[in-house]
Image (cartoon, rainbow, N blue to C red; front, side):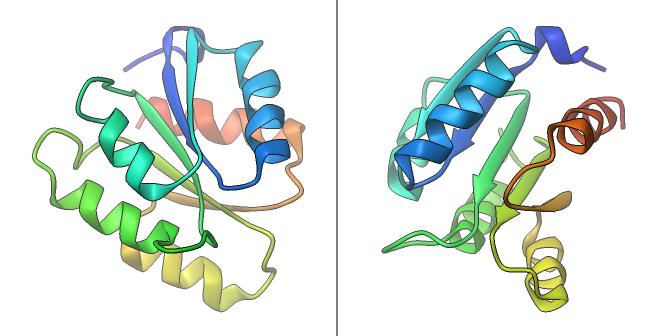
Length: 126
């Protein structure tokens, strides 16, 4: 069990504004935030960074969040790392697909900080 303030979070999103927002929001509550702009960059970072929590966009060019979480869950080192999917799509099918692919939680963009932080805290205490 890790306290949110001690967490190292990997945030993956192709939108620089969302990455900046996640860095600002999370930076106030966690030990460290590492950002990646693509699935490939995130997978490369996982070779040297061992996050306690992952927040990833679903819809990204080239490889999407579903590809990312499947590869993450196939990795011995990272298969149990809590992961939150983010998406601007409001369809329940997107939520169901994210959970089926291996994410632990699904949240819609734009983020509601009052809901976002308690979700992260809960995931770290499971």
